[in-house]
Length: 59
Image (cartoon, rainbow, N blue to C red; front, side):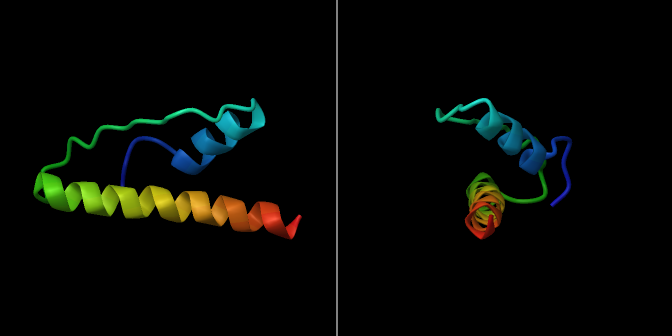
C-alpha cells in the first residue's frame, strides 16, 4: 500500500509515549469505492498492529 505516512513508525512512537487512544486516518485515493478502501485500509492497519504485537511478544 502506498501512502504518505509511515504508520508503523507513527504507531511505534505513540506506543513509546504510552498513548492508548483512538487513531484516525483519511484515504484520499480514488482507485476503489469508499467501502473497498475502508476494508483495504483496515486490513493494512490491522496487519501493522499485529506485526508490532508479534515483535513485542518475541522480546
